[in-house]
Length: 186
Image (tube, rainbow, N blue to C red):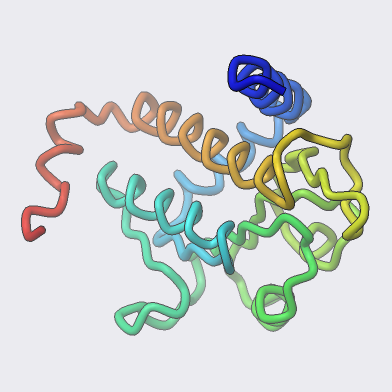
């Protein structure tokens, strides 16, 4: 495939997956974020990196947000939201976190690529991204030109960006305020 053909194929894969995300699930996650006292973000590997970027944007919006496993993350408690990103929905440490917090008075949410997974079944709010494309490794989605789990990761990042845009509007946050919260020690 030529570079131009690959670009077209990548855009088609990402667009096709994102168009199948249920808008009602996005709405529910937005409500969960807005109603939370604090938001705790969790994810592992490349998905975890996307989730950390989302945590940064939530901080730019002025929300109280923490990344699970960071040394400065406080204890999670009643009124808080744990938001997990997981393509497989089966990452052991994330499953353990979700299962151990079920029934404790906090909200559990996930952005996940597998509806038939422990994480998807355990959370209160789920955004399903049908982009788990690597069938040979247990994925359930269509084949993609992107390698391994990259389709999910790119769709996750864009889904989080969509949420940031919606949250920015809902909160009435000006982009100048977001820029004022941007790191100034670099």
